[in-house]
Length: 322
Image (tube, rainbow, N blue to C red):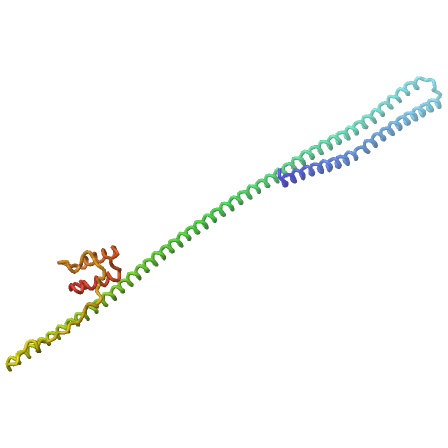
């Protein structure tokens, strides 16, 4: 039993006690009003009986005096008169007693009615207090049930709110992780693209440099060949002129040809290799690429040397850019 229910029960007991006290007080007051009336009735009856006896004695004396005045003291009228007087006295006293008893019976009825009425008031008052208490307890239980339902509903809503927040947090975390992964993938793709572009740019620069070197070498060889051709032509002219004049001397007029030393030109492959790309009958870019890749993998050539060798071989064979 909780504190509120205990308080309601205590209030019920106090109300019942107060009701009993009030009813007993009112009943005592009502009954107290009857008691003096009963005493007064009894006293009146006693006085009436005394008056009835006195009047009977007065009548007796008056009748005796009447007879004495007539000289009939010893006549038979005296006995009859005495008997009549006693009968009248008995009837009067009986009427007084009857009236007294009737009045006392009425008072007794009033007393019983008062007791019955107050007992009924006590019963109905007690029932009303019990009903009020039951109503309060029922209302309190209903209030407790409503509060419990409200708490359960609040707990359910809080649980749903927390679940929704947790779901949103997980969704946000998943989205953040997805975005981070996408960013990482995009960054990796950009880095790979940048590396590829840088490598392609570097390869193009190396290839362009090698191509320029090859063009310079070809131009130098062409000029040397042109110088030799001019020297030969000059020699032939001088020989023809000498022959026509009859003074031809082969040892004196032999032209001297100057060749450029190409031993210091940087070769694409400095280390000994097991097989040569140039010596193949049919050279394709794919074959050249496989050959230089094998040389790099075997450690016989660096990647830079391999790129230069690859470009130079393609230029030499006339397949560059195919």
